Length: 289
Image (cartoon, rainbow, N blue to C red; front, top):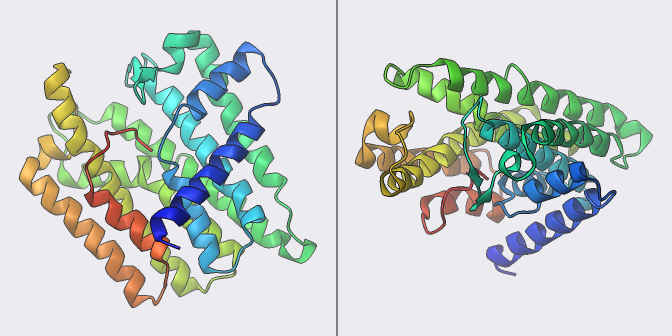
């Protein structure tokens, strides 16, 4: 089967499970949660998690709990990012953002609900008792990478660093935390559950750091065109920092480095290769995953 078809099938499986998880109620809160999660998106992080788990023989039924939990965490972060006190975005994936549709109060609670639901979903993953330490380790890893040391730490940098004075080093730190942390968490989840060696986990982490940078630079390139077309005020990004052509070269460099890491570690996965290489395509607009 072609790798594109395998990716498409996995994405359908993820979408079905997310829809099931969010069909537990019809309250306004559930409506807000569903609008955010089920309105599209690349499902990039859960796809990485499933591909990583497959590398190490983790059953899809088990891995799906963690893959979907990571997507719930990601979408909670998008709801909060869009709030007027943060990025102040009125649209997400071409549709009104959560706070524009439901109000800021409901949006805050919808984000909180997605985050807590994520940990409920992970706790219910069906593993044998002897494998429970791996499950605990994955939940701990995701907690750390989604928190102050990872994604939230990156969001803090995003709102405190000056767009005019941001340095290359600060930009990379911001992106590795805000965007890269959940990508790394997705990859490490499958590896830990599959009892990968420390060197294999380290290689996947480095692969994840590189595609995290590539992912954000790609979105920055797309957003720079959109911001000009829609006359949005410029935000700090790879294009404003490096210029368009240099940003494109950096995108290519990070993707090539990620692929080389997989090859050197003998991690054979056509899906992980595809998910990295596909970042060089710019046909679709930025959705932030």
